[in-house]
Image (cartoon, rainbow over all chains, first blue to last red; front, side, top):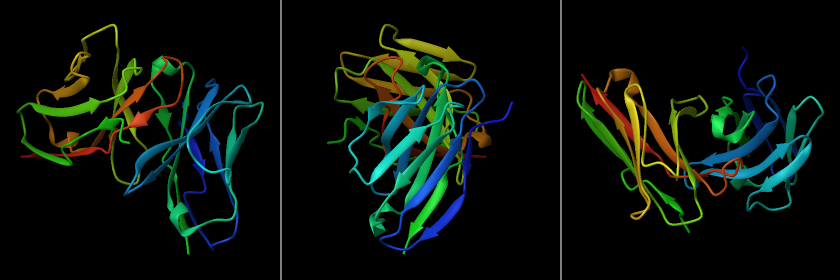
Length: 112
Length: 113
C-alpha cells in the first residue's frame, strides 16, 4: 500500500512569505503529526491532528498552523517566514499510536 | 532542556558484531519508547518500540532494553550488517496513544565491512 506522501519535496521561499505543505497519510490512518528537523534542534514535534481536530501541540509560535481534512489529509502552513524556518518538515501518520508511526520523506524548505 | 539524549553522535562497528546504541531520558512521565532509523533524503523508519511495563522487546536482529530506574534505553543490533548504516533516533512519548514524540539528537551508525 502507498506510504505517507508529502508534497512538494523541495521548496524555496523568501523571508516574509507564507508556505503551505501537504501530507497524505496511509489509507486508514487517522492520526497525522508534523515534525521539524534542523541540524541544531533535531526532530521537534509541531502538532498532531486526529479526526480533523488538533490533539497535541508543540512549542512553536503561532505562525505555524495546520489542519486536517475529512479524508485525513493534512496541511501545515507557516506565515511570515523567517530564515530560521529553513528545515526538513516531516509528516507522520498512524492508525493507533502504539503501532508505530510511519513518516513521509519530508519537504525541504529553504527560506532565503 | 533536552529530555531525550543520545550522547554518542556517531558509532562505528564491524560487520557481524553487535551494535549498541544508547539513549537516556529525564522525564519520568514518558511511558512509551521507540527507535527509528533514517537514511539521507528519507523520512525516519520505525524499527521497534517498548512500553514502560516491559524491560525488553525483541524483533529479529533488533532488541530494545529499557531500564526505568536508570531512565535508560538501548538498542542492540545483532549481527550488524552494512545496510544498518544510518542515523538512529530514539523517541519517547508521555502517553501511549499520543503522537507527541520527543526525539533524541540521533546517532550515526557506520558498519564497516
